[in-house]
Image (cartoon, rainbow, N blue to C red; front, side, top):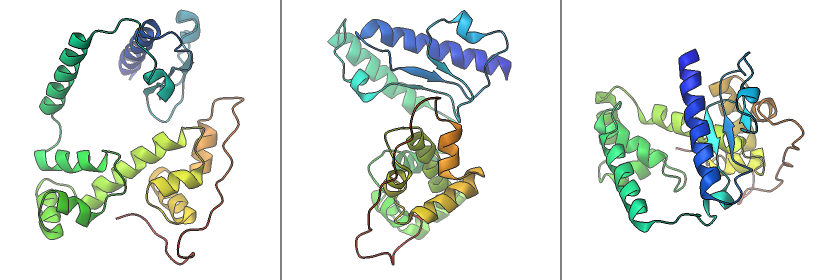
Length: 224
């Protein structure tokens, strides 16, 4: 675990250093680590590194405006080479059976709420065939959907500009209560508690979004 922490932290800091060199202002880019702060004092070892420890998962947060900032050293040829290499790396990515990997990619593509039938339609097969093929690879659509929803929920809840109600709506929950129950079943804590536990000190939480679901309050439940 200590070696994993060191490797992830160094890779994250290297990426942050690269972003610092590529754009004029990368002050809002932060490195989040799921490990506690080392007793040796990481902040002293990497002054000004913008490190946040005890995060729910390890990641580098790059705001949208930083991603769209002009690059100091634009190189179209290098860009094309890098994109090609990334596509090849994704194609070589192992660890999941082929069909499971393709279904997971659909669930994570960010194009909206996915259901069993909508995913089956993408592959031009019936929903029963989809379930059977996933079962043959040792998983299920319900399991993959839950993993995808949990990952997306945790990431969106870390976005301080988004209310819990908005996160629930984005994930396809028409009722905030159902989303809260589902999230607590996955993690053992409510969405609000999760957000408070991982909120940087001194940063206010977004205000809840108050709105009425179309067609009244009769429809509720989880997506899929």
